[in-house]
Length: 131
Image (cartoon, rainbow, N blue to C red; front, side, top):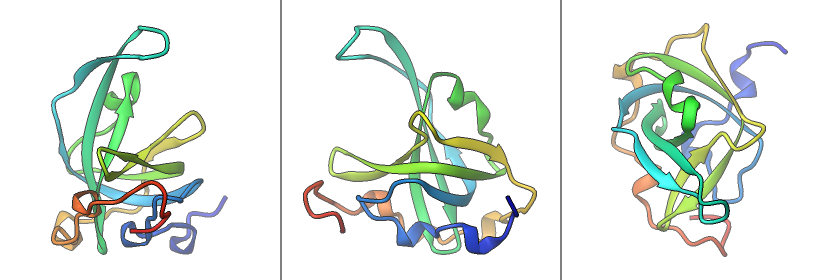
């Protein structure tokens, strides 16, 4: 598949109903990983959240287990087939089972990231589909 910008959605275009989205984002911050337990299996998992963004805004990316080790502050990544989830009335990105993350061949500079539009700070509800 060609690495063309038109294949990528912008952060400001994310909606609670978005699935199978491709984004190119710069990592601004990676929070300390935390342990959680699956409410279904009781298994312990590690959850890492990263604040990522592009020229239209920022959003929290939730990474589970080993995926949390794949991101570094200051690098640009291509996210493929990711989905938008809602956690505590806040939009988050998730790789899910079919999502992929890889270092991008195209760099987004930190200075070009729109830090004033954090879509994860907007209160959303699951039922509407849009915020």
